[in-house]
Image (cartoon, rainbow, N blue to C red; front, side, top):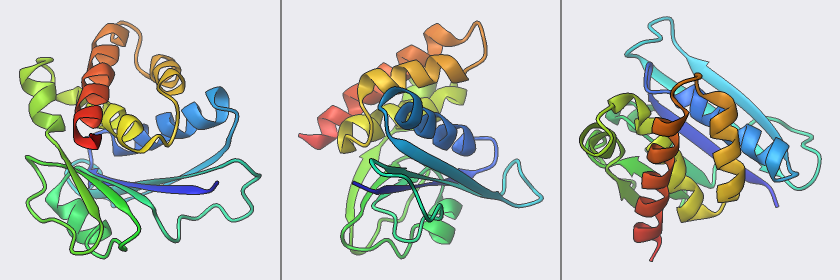
Length: 179
């Protein structure tokens, strides 16, 4: 089954890394096919950025996300540029402290990723990993085992424990919101 995931936020939040990790989880550890693309402006840090992943059980013949069914929005600017027209069939996870608007048509799940990263883990830099954990448990797009392995493969050496704690916090938040 084809899943199209669009991540957006501002440069410096790890939006592109999130999509890379999700694609890695699907392709390397869940035996699926995955293609990742990205867009960011010349302002890189602070400007709107977007990254997308197509995940499928079959070979991917068209690599572009044309009809996302999962949105991960981590900034107001990212919502306005990439999420405002989300279709009814989609599920949108928003960082509830940074995104003030909500979609008109689709299901919206509020995840306080930045607050959790800052208060619970003491490092705002892992907010994207908190959000990745929530995406996985709220949508089932990849397995929790696959995303754990992909996170460990992708984060800088010496930060593995912090990132796994962030991922597990995200798992818990996603489960709470799913129920």
